[in-house]
Amino acid sequence: MIQPPEYIRDIQPYVPGKPIEELERELGISKSVKLASNENPIGPSPAAINAIRNSADINRYPDGGGYYLTQALSQMLGIAQDELILGNGSNEVIDIAVKTYMQDGDEAVMAVPSFVVYAMAVKAVGGTPVQIPLKEYTNDLAAMADAITPRTKMVFIANPNNPTGTLNKQAEFDAMMIRIPDTVLVVIDEAYYEYVTDPEYAQSMKYFGSDKNIIILRTFSKMYGLAGLRIGYGIGKKELLSDMNRIREPFNTNTLAQEAARAALTDTEHVSRSRACNEEGKKYLYDEFRNLGIAFVATESNFIYMPINDSSTIHRRLLEQGVIIRPMGPNAIRVTIGLSEENRRFVQALKNVLSSQF
Ligand SMILES: Cc1ncc(COP(=O)(O)O)c(C=O)c1O
View 1 (cartoon, protein in one colour):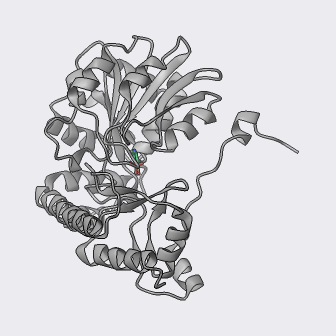
View 2 (cartoon, helix red, strand yellow):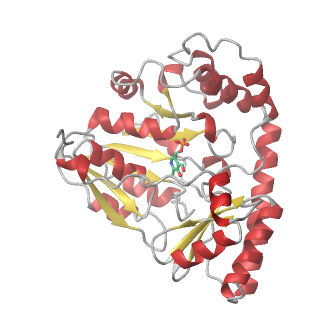
View 3 (tube, protein in one colour):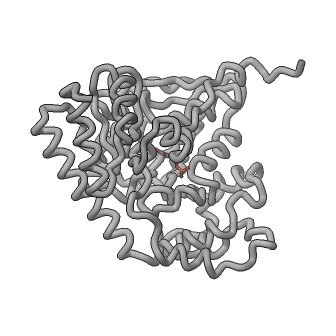
């Protein structure tokens, strides 16, 4: 029988959650709340919905270069269009970068826990993820720089980090960047960029014009509420992006996603509303956790990491009450900040679990 190479057999497949309807049927529950995937609970911008409704051309292939969307992004960011690459989610841009720059035997430095896709993408090309533990729930940039060897091709930094929601500040970021050799590509993943409130947040764009090799990732899946359409982008020097474009699928992002994303960029009111909802939810949850004496990590994104024993039992018991969160290893859970009613449901269910009434 045909077998994939050993490095593919070693990959643990990503286990997708069941559709919510299926889960409800199995558990005999209804009206469950999904706080597991860091989506925007408000939904997409009405402007994005309108753009989709008015988009009639889906008998045609999409615009492979995403001309109008990259034009809008280039205006917003003050960069050239050929300094942008679109992806089927920013996830695809990670894959494209890894396939472009890494091969069997190469290493990529990343934090652990961090976004699981980095390690998966690296293993898929026969590379080795070098995983550096977080320090106080935050990327340990000095230790990550220490881990760079002649075999290192890439460094991944999620800023803010998923699942902990913490960020790296400018000074530590600058100290790390000085130590990056010119043979290494740094991927700075800013999927939660739009949620950050800390004024000391490291500005990665500062390095955009420098001689460092960086790709900055952003996405329409989070603040812009378009996770289901799959669209994100990378920002980088045009020399890097032209390497990556060699292996990009010609029509990797679809027409509806491109048009909805472009419309979403114009709807600043939707962004403000989404941000305000997140801030309000964050404050409510912090207050409740403090009242309950539950540990949590302060977040700069739209989810909260909570160190808690026996996370799989907590996960199951919450599920039985119709609240879906994400267990993160044996001793932590991650909950997405939802609408106020959803946050209340989560807190009540958690109280029930902790007081063993359930
Ligand atoms: C840190 C981080 N990067 C990238 C992604 C991928 O997002 P998308 O492919 O939807 O743009 C996620 C999604 O959860 C994430 O948490």
